[in-house]
Length: 301
Image (cartoon, rainbow, N blue to C red; front, side, top):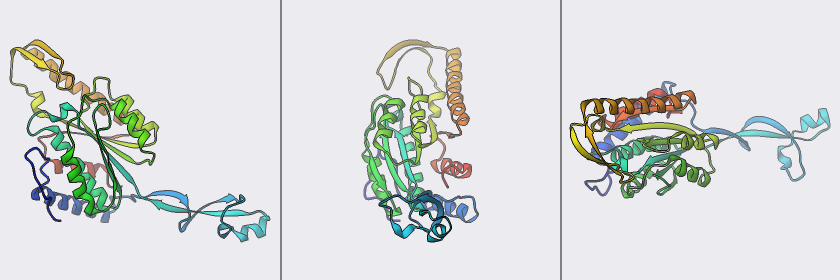
């Protein structure tokens, strides 16, 4: 695989080392396929393929080539033979580009782009159609569906060019997404899920419009292990709201407990609706997270 033509300090490190890891992950995915751990990725639809599916009563204007004359000889009624054909799986990567994802260096946004690019490469290698949709309180852009391994560099360039969005609103962004994308498929949501209005309405919008969600929650361990105390002013990175507080050990303990409760609720929502859920700190190498996804069977279908 050739390397990308450019690299910027703020990019998601799509460098030679990253490309080597993609090749490794692809080899792992092929081994899983060979061992039977990967099911068929195409979706069956009724059409004009080769595998017989069912019969349908003839209507004027139907293709007479599909009439079953043997059935007619027995019943004196005209029936069409229907067949199964395969449709490429569409994979949509909904990547959170809100302000909270851009804090720190490295940050969740760079990590999210690497995860999206790695999973997109596996999808492209399996001839799925892959699309990238960054979002915040709205859809921030869209890379139209691409197919084939060579399209990975188009994905790199698109992800590198994405800018920071506004505050997070899954409900608003996903409402727009489902209205713009009528072809159903796998919707991989990569986010820290810091949505003040909650996550249920947004994920429900995907489910109700027959997309198959997969949730990848990212967090930064530095957000949990704060090392300051005393009188401080905190500023909401997404709304710019400022507040003066006194940080005490008890407050930090309560903060960590609230965060854990938040994660538990998100995981519980996903499990109760049979949505695959993964949580990972950005300090974990991204390829380890990808292997977890593979082992869970949520992506190698």
